[in-house]
Amino acid sequence: MSARATVGILLALAAPAAAQHTRNVIFLTVDGVRQQELFEGADPILLEAGDKSGIEDERALRERFWRDTTEKRREALLPFFWTELAPAGIVMRSTISNPHRNSYPGYSELLTGRVVSEITGNIDLQNPAQTVLEIVRRELDLGPLAVAAVTSWGHFPFIVESQPGTIFVNAGVRDVPTAFANREIERWNRLQHRMPSPWDSVRYNAVTLGIASELLELYQPRLLFIALDETDEWAHSRRYDRTLQAIRSFDDALRALWAKVQALPAYRGRTTLVVTTDHGRGLTTEEWTSHGEGIDGAENTWIAILGPDTPASGSVDTPAENRQVAATLLSLLGLEPALLGREAGASIPLARRAQ
Ligand SMILES: [Zn+2]
Image (cartoon, rainbow, N blue to C red; front, top):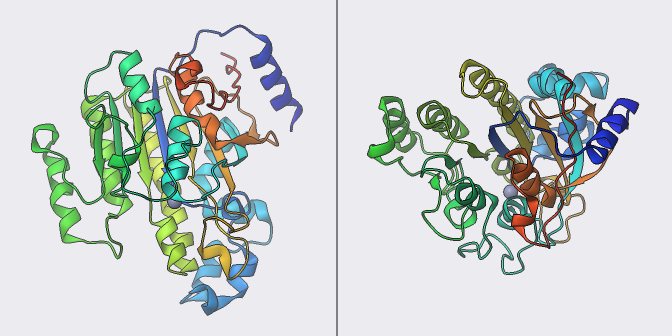
C-alpha cells in the first residue's frame, strides 16, 4: 500500500463520520472479468495459445492489446479505468465468499452483503434476503424510479429484490413500459428485438447502457444499478478475442457514463461510481473460460470506487471482499450498514478527499 493510501485509510478509521458529498451512487458490474485482465491487461498465456483461445486474428488482436509491460497492457485494454478512474479513485483486489463461484450467488453477495445459503446457483428463486436496493428505497423514502436496476441478463428480477416491485427493474430482452419511456428508450425497446444476441436471455450491453443513460437523465435515480454481461458469455464461448473486445467496450462505457455524470448538474461532484464483478474465472488455458465450484481463481475479483468521498489512492494493496460492497453503498448514501444485518460485511473505509 502506498503511504498516501495508508494515511487515507487511517484517517477514515480515526475520524468521526464526516459530512459526505455523495448524494447519488451508480453501481456498475461487469460479469466475470478476471483480475488478470483488469490488473495486467491481455494475458500472454492465452494470447500464445492462439486459436486454442478462439482467437481468429491473432495479429490484429496483438496490435490492439499487446504491450511489453503490464502497465501499458492494462492501459491498452482499459484506458479510462487506468489513466482516469484509478488515479482519482481506489482499486482493490477482492474475493467472493460464496462457494458456488457463479453469477446469482455472486450478485446476491454484492447486493445483500452476505452469502445467502438458499442461492446455490443461477436458480429461479426470488432472493430470500432483502437487498441494498430495497433498503435504500425504504430508508430514504424514495419514489418508485429513484432506485433502478438496468441489466443485460434477464435473470436479475429474481436477484435484485426480495419483494417484487420494490424498485424499478429492466432486465434482459424486455421493454421499458411505455409509461416510463421517452422516444429514445422506445427506440431501444424496438432495437433489442431486431438485434438478438447469441445468448438466451441476454441482450447487448449497448442496449442496457442506452436505456440506463436515458433513465439517469429522465428520473435522476439516487441509486442506479447497471449490470453488464457479454464478457462472461464470450469467455464461456472460448473466444478470447471477443472477451478482450468486450472488456474494452466496458471501459468505453465507464468513460461515457462518467462524462454523463459530469454533464448533469444533479450528479456533477455529488456522485460516486462503484464498479466490480460477480466472480472471477479459471487461471489456465483450459479453465479460463469457466467459473464455479472447484475452479481455482474464480474466487478472485476486484472493486473500484471513484467519487467525491473517495481518496485518490490508485491501486492499493488492501484486500477487500465483495460482501463489503452493500455496506459501502449504504455508507455512501449516508445510511447505516447495520441495516443489512449482523452477517453482512463491513463498509470499505474511505477517506474524504481534501477540498
Ligand atoms: Zn457471472
